[in-house]
Amino acid sequence: MTRDTEIPPALAAKLLDELTAIVARASALIRAISPATVAHRIKPDQSPVTAADEASEAAILEGLARLLPNVPVVSEEMAGRKTPPALDHSFIVVDPLDGTKEFLAGTDQFTVNLAIVTRGVPIAGIIAAPNRGQIWRGIAGGKAERLRLLADGADQPQAIRTRRWPAQGAVAAVSRSHLDPNTVAFLDRLAPIARNPSGSAIKFCQLAEGTVDIYPRLATTCEWDVAAGHALLVAAGGIVTTPQGTALPYGRVAENFRVPAFIAWGDPAKAAAVGH
Image 1 (cartoon, rainbow, N blue to C red):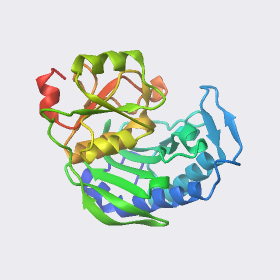
Image 2 (tube, rainbow, N blue to C red):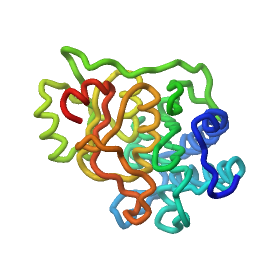
Image 3 (cartoon, one colour):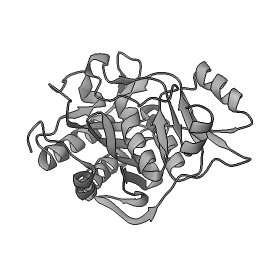
Image 4 (cartoon, rainbow, N blue to C red):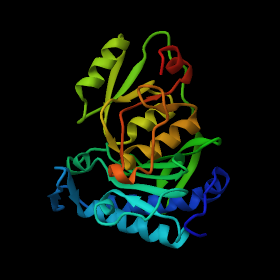
């Protein structure tokens, strides 16, 4: 492959097992590190980074260098040090440990995220929850599934699908640590709706498997926090848009890979009904 090679969904599907194995190996490295004793430092954005973040990133970058040596990679811990020259075709976006605060607290609310983005659209997503022993993955226009996480891969795939918006008992996934006032106000307008606080990209996984109905994030965030979940959710039958109903942009080098506010819906018909 060359740097201007595009990875279409059909090729991404062929790579899915190998990419899953890369994410699984990174997850095993994280599990081998004790959050009670690991040293951490605070980055300029006031978020923590640990040896687990760095070990996971190194393993993923090594695996991607072997599998897709000419495809640019954007990874959270690398982003401040090295920017790919261009992201016009396909690139891979990685969060080696999404939810470092949750990891340090010893919870199961952190993930490893990997996505393929082609021409600004996430077409494949893999999300692993190391302390839950689960991995979710999906291909645009293809299937979404949940698997049991193994040390070097995953097995026992189970197809997952979003659910229709329920007449009663709708549930919103909300951030455990970043619930902003705009999101609260939006949910109040949708009331009555229950709120299910979760960490990291697990909220997208809950949407994809039909245990929650909506995940609004009405504040900016980073591409590596969203891209894998975006691809997974679309594969499972959902959608992700801005609050105005437009496509969520990716490959925003000039914006330091920030994406605008978004709403993730399990049921596209409900999104259309409320004007999103």
